[in-house]
Image 1: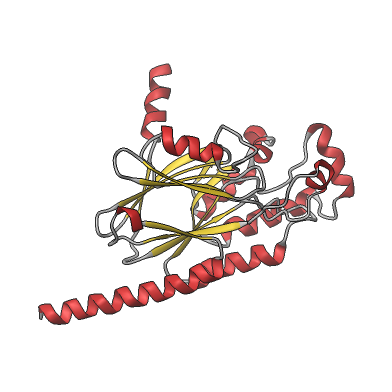
Image 2 (image 1 turned 135 degrees about the horizontal axis):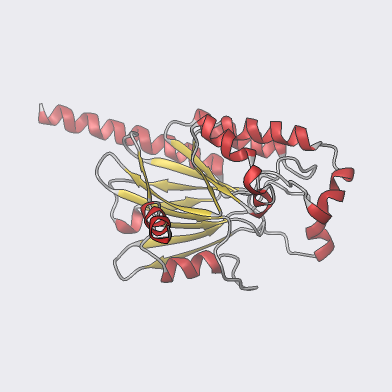
Length: 275
C-alpha cells in the first residue's frame, strides 16, 4: 500500500497541461479570495475575473483560501458576517466556474472542511484542477518549450525582511521551476534566482482580495498587499526573457495584447517570405 501511494505521489509530482495558444501568454496569479468576508474587495475580484475572460492569451490560477470558512472556535465570527455560510458556497461556486484556471490550490481555511470539502466537487464539475496545499504544473507550449510552476498556499520559510523568503528558498533549493508561488500571508513579495542549470526562477508571494482585515489591523501588520499579479511568458525569448512579471494587471493585459499582435504579424511576414 505504501509503494502504491508513493508511486501515485511521484506520478503527480509534475502535472502536465498542454497549452494550445500560440505566441505569448499571460498567467494572472490571484491571491487568497476570502470571498465570503465583508472585507473582500469584490470590485477588484470581479475586475480581474473579467480581465482574464476578455483578454486573449490570459490564463489564471489561485493559491487558495477561497472562503473564510470559519470553523471550531472561530465559528463565532459568522455572527458578525453579513454573508451566511450557504451564501459563501454560492460565491465560491461562482468564482471557480467563472474562469478557466490552470491551478486551484486549497489553503488552510479550505482544509478546515476536511474530507467534506465541496470545493473538490465544484472544481471537478467545472473542469478546473484542484489540489490541496500545493501542486507543480508543467505548461507545455506549442513550440516545445515548457513553463514549470510550483504553486503552494505557502512555501515554508519566513523573514521579516523579505515577504518572498519562503518561495525564494524553494526556488533556490528546489527543482528547476520558472515560477515559485505562494499566498497565505496577505502580502506581496518578489525575487529572482538563477539556477545552476541556467533557469531563471521567479519567487512570488501574492496578496489577498481581503483588503479590509480586522486581524491585520489588530496585529498592526504593515500594508503591502497586492491581490493579483501577472507573469508574461514569451515562448521565443531566451532564458532570461522567458518569464516577466507585471504587478499592474491592466498594464499586463495591454502589453500581452500588443505582444500577441506583434507575434501574429511577424508570423504572417515569415509565412509570406517562405512562399
